[in-house]
Amino acid sequence: MTHPGEPCKNGQSSFWYSQGCFIGCPTCDHKSGRRQTDLCQLGKEQTLPVYARSININATGIYDIYKHNPWRAPGNAPVADACGLAGGDPWGADGAEAGNYYNTTYAGHGKYGTTLPEMPTGTTWTIGGEADVMWQVRNNHGGGYSYRLCPASENLTEECFQRHPLDFVAEKAGLLFPDGSKQLIKPVHVNVGTSPAGSTWARIPVAPTLLGPVCIPGPHDDPDAPYSCAAKNNPKTPCGCTPCPETPGSDCSRCWDCGTPDFTPTMHDGKPVEGVGPVIGMTDVVKVPANLPAGKYVLGFRYDCEATAQVWSNCADITLAPASTTQLV
Image (tube, rainbow, N blue to C red; front, side):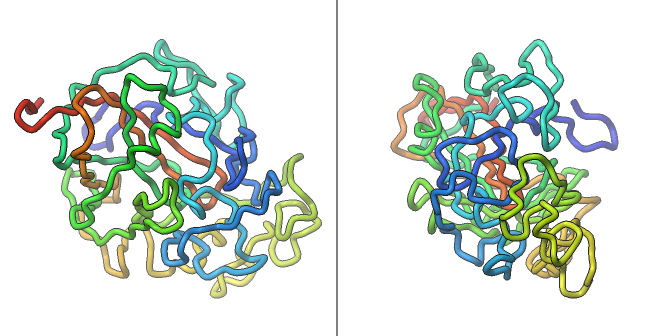
């Protein structure tokens, strides 16, 4: 619902996600969203090129606390559901990390996104053509994203979506402002170290914001993990993370932005972003594969976080049609 003078209201679409999902692990534990560790102890190495990091850019060794989180190996971390879990856990009750979801006639807390009934959008894409996509970030935990397709006639599994990743049209990436205007940007795309191999992912083009304190000690914190939230390993700061050099003794919230002094919500590539009001959405153009048959599909959006062990997802019903039969709707 849209109100005059306010950004787009998209219901609870920002509360479909999986958490406790670490690279190399077979499953998510649904609760360890901010635990910085190799949860399953399988020793999976990060594969993301350093240039594609969104936070803690120059950190190495024990200071590189986000190395087990999804964005460090895009597409590799497991998900609870390819279209997300309502509220972030399957237990039907509000959980950790803002795991809130208000039950409606359409879905309830703990609902698996892939089990929702078909909801036609009236959107038709041209096979072999290009399509506009846009997403609005509510909880910006750094990282990046990918768009994928799965035939509606198949099981909506992560494996199905990963068979049909969509490429971006780099020169048409942009930012959206509240007044409806857009500004083209030079995106950071990465296709090295991604899953499926060679698939292209886009780094979020605005800096992480409103992340809040990183470390809130809890019963699942590992006191022996370097720079964990547990008190045993907090030798540097109250929150156990790396403070920004220019702000010694800073609180946890400052640790998120280290290494990104020229990359803020109102800057891009070191230059001021022109527009009316704050950035409210990221716009992209994707290529519709020419080798897919016409029919009904589900468009999947996967956002792999870097500052948290979370994967945020959305899905939508669309139709692919040959160029000769595509109609504007």
